[in-house]
Image 1 (cartoon, rainbow, N blue to C red):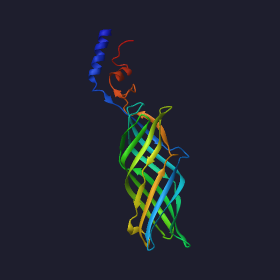
Image 2 (cartoon, rainbow, N blue to C red):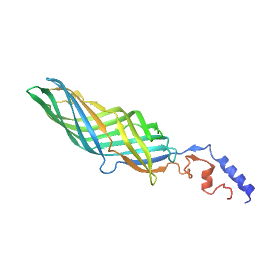
Image 3 (spheres, rainbow, N blue to C red):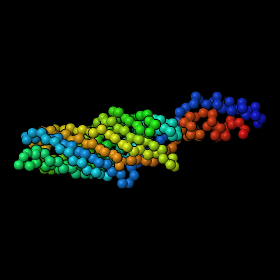
Image 4 (cartoon, rainbow, N blue to C red):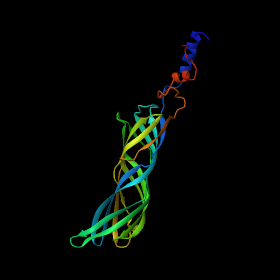
Length: 251
């Protein structure tokens, strides 16, 4: 084929393509072994003695995962959609001192929290800043788990609380076509326990869960979603046909 025919074939190939289409990448990321979080649980309880509050903080192991859609195809990424985020803290027990009076001391309550999981309910999208930061306002999460309380009030119940929280993270490319999510942040999650499930003598119970995710990271490989973006430019156009050996001018 002579050069004129090659140029005509290249032009026809480009014309046969739709307008250049954006292409994205996706990543499935998980927490590495040894990840942890600092969990602060606050409790506010109302009984015949009145209303009292206390907090307790524990460092606990955490597992988690997320699915991210990153745009454009290759770093530097400028946008992200997280359509699945799961944060799974380990079981932990928290101690609270309530109704403290001079010379009398405090009444105590211990709360064992098990099967606690935070799961996103809907995709969340954000621009990615030049430093890799993304912020998701009004992110929808569901907190579920079980608790057993012993002490000044004894009882057991289930947490099942859809909530809206501000969620944030930093997204950075790593070697070997990997991506890392770190610097996770989440606003406190407040659960007002259903009065019908409260033990006798307790008229109100509120549990506030605050996580510090300094030592919680997620990482994994990223791959282009669009198999036709052969050049990795974030576009599907004539250059990708050329990468397949179609419609290219001779060197």
